[in-house]
Image 1 (cartoon, rainbow, N blue to C red):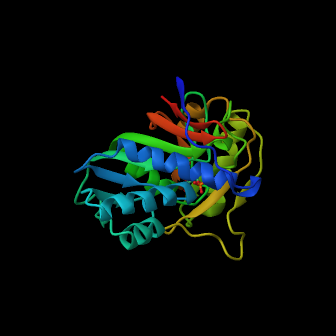
Image 2: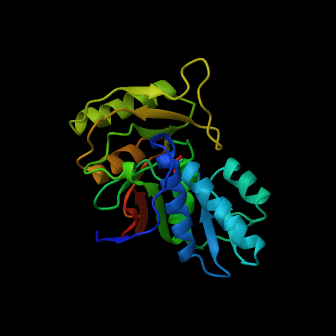
Image 3: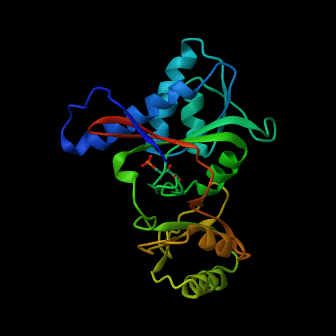
Amino acid sequence: PQVRLCRTRRPQQDEGSMSDAWKRMAAEKALEDVRPGMKLGIGTGSTAEHFIRALGARVRDGLDVVGVPTSERTETLARSEGIQMTTLDHLPSLDLTVDGADEIDPQMNLIKGGGGALLREKIVAAASQRMVVIADASKLVPVLGGFPLPIEVVPFGLGATWRAVEKVFADLGLSGALSLRGGDDHPFVTDSGHYILDAALTEIRAPAALAAALVAIPGVAEHGLFIGLASKAYVAGPDGVATVT
Ligand code: 5RP
């Protein structure tokens, strides 16, 4: 990927809020990719929420777009911002999806799902001609896997699915603990009624092989490896917003 730095103003906030300021800078940069009349996939997470608020301001100024949300909380926020929202049933093909990420590697493969929306995020990204990622610089990594890989699973047969996922890791020479997000007593439930297993793998050297093996498990609804889906990323840090293509 080529990195072009476009210098913009540096955030003046203290260290604690720098990352949020960078997320907002990346999100606002992505507005440059939005054209009147576009059908937009709209991501989930704190960076995506900056995008939704910035897009809402443009919509209230007269920009005509329609969005498809990647989660119920994104839909609620987008509607409250005045953005017209619909579904993939009405608009099965989108022009552009803008979404955050938990990790971005040099090939622009991603880990997503920290916010628990990975299944809908992947469906929406796959229905889009282009996916643009917005992130702060902490999300750039040389190798995926430092962030625990979210795996969305069907609650039925959880024990068997858990064991099958562990077998995939062992077959691929990966070691790392699996945990049920939210814990046994109060598991996190996704918008599609699934659970999430978080896999602490450290390094994923062959993400495509892992992705293929995970989706072959019947109880796996989807996993957070986004391979070949993103075409551009806006990554903001102390030197401004870098465009990664
Ligand atoms: C939600 C996601 C988010 O895009 C990802 O977790 C990044 O979140 P944030 O923008 O809050 O750092 O994949 O499922």
